[in-house]
Image (cartoon, rainbow, N blue to C red; front, side, top):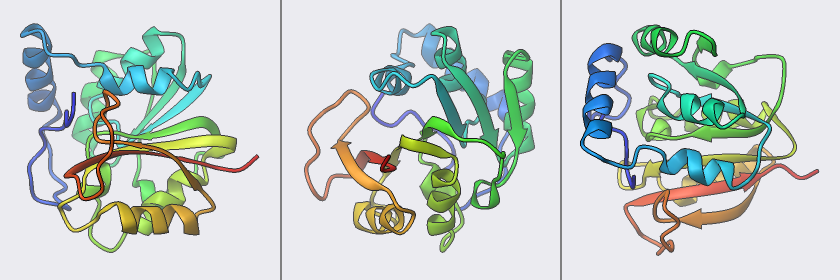
Length: 195
């Protein structure tokens, strides 16, 4: 999926309905839509552990866990996490703001799928990236996919990643690996923490 997130378009909006969101995802899956592009891309990096940051109702985390990856899902919205806990009670789910997150551990990969930087309150994207970077093991990757025309583009994201000690490794126009064209409206970026 190029842009799997169907949350409201208003950047910074904070109120969701996890069950309604999950019903929409279930309807898309039942129609035959590819729901696992993010998980497939992530699995290509062969992580043993993933922090699904801004996990929503857990669509990607559940698929990664099904494939044998250790996953922790975090979202700031209690409704989303309540639905995730109902869908996959065997996984670890946390309600937390990613900008100040401290789980006391690191992961091979931190995933920001579903436009998380777009829905982070304006001016806090740097703290979001830093919070995710704190949870990366040496050599770990931060993988983020988001719309770039909403006031936070790849230049600003790269600067925030650089400030957090991460270096750009890959960038695509979609989760399917379509080539990135500067100025595109969607980007999937992979930044890596040096070993």
